[in-house]
Image (cartoon, rainbow, N blue to C red; front, side, top):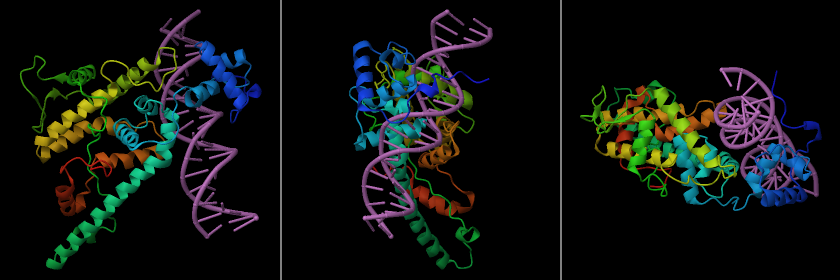
Length: 339
DNA sequence: AATCAGGTCAACCGCAGCTAG
DNA sequence: CCTAGCTGCGGTTGACCTGAT
């Protein structure tokens, strides 16, 4: 037995809104508010529309201070960075961009940004492949007796664009508060080693963290997501529909994330390769697991995006990859061509 | 000028979570 | 505790637009 429909579908108009409908809805909400009940609202004002449709129309189009189109470079960066960090949580991303709606951002991502980024990624990959091929050919010409890895596989692997998940400098209006990040990690079940702990946490492979990273991977992700959800709902649960309001007070999800990344970047600065691997594995929990519950197409795009973050190093091209990594990794941040 | 393909975006759908009764 | 109703969210659809052939 399914749920009862939210409205009588036979008596509800669908499709584009007329200017008259817009005017009715806007006038009513500006005068009376939504009354906390979208389902009842269309009947009150004599609109043959579903309550959900009214809500959507108001939030995405009629609400004051809505911006349409004309995304700036800075907004692009924020969207990309957040998408890579948290995936397709459009409402959360929209909350960081005043005047933008989740629907707008989602459309913008799906129609333009994704292609823009993938285009850049492919260009970089192609450039690297050419460089790698040249190197390989040179090596083979020097030693004709030793077959190179290229000969062993007709498939040339996707080469990673190594990039930190988020550029802290670009997210200039959040994530500056160390304490907030600490409290986030604590809420997530982590533990700072200097919180009455004798020493820095050391993992099995010897890498050291300033906090305890021993919580289970699934728990970390689940907790992170519920934290994000609760932060978002705190912002939106006031009864006034303000999905695009920036998180108003206290440490934001984004702040926590960025502090997290700042922390990781600091780690990266002095880590050796082993430590880097460990950090990436650790930090990868949030992002990789973030692809759950998406469609296959979404998963594909997520994988595409994830390749900006996580180098996948096919084993049979190690030589070439090493040279690539030497030249491309950790020379400094690489953000979608904004270097 | 007609047709087609691809892009864009507003709107719909269905699910999950929350909450009041 | 359970259930029904509501809200919010993310994925998808389809109408419209635009540029290429």
